[in-house]
Length: 121
Image 1 (cartoon, helix red, strand yellow):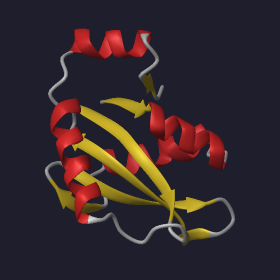
Image 2 (image 1 turned 135 degrees about the horizontal axis):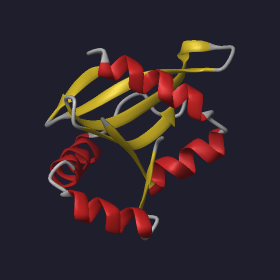
Image 3 (image 1 turned 90 degrees about the horizontal axis):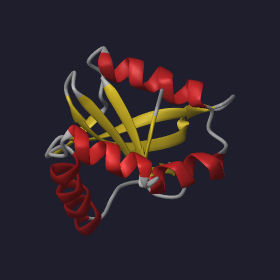
Image 4 (image 1 turned 60 degrees about the vertical axis):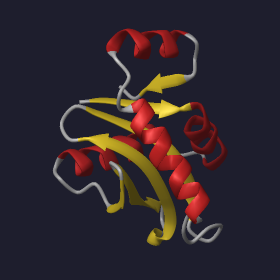
């Protein structure tokens, strides 16, 4: 499965100094069928622990997932900053998920070269 990070998600991981290994562990859980809470439209909210503090004091990762094919890490936030997405934010994320999940390989390669996306190795 290919895993991509949006530019906004990359900024979040840098700001919070999230280790790539934490993201890889989360992706493994998703691949094992534990994508988190469904928000509809192939969008999920997954809990990610803060180092040394656990999941309840951790982060929420919003992602779009097509089982076994592709995963887009769209947005992340600390639980203490935001409990839930607003209806407007949720609609926007669902619309974005529909778009990104429809991209073909050639489009993904162009976006990677333009640094609009980063691929998680």
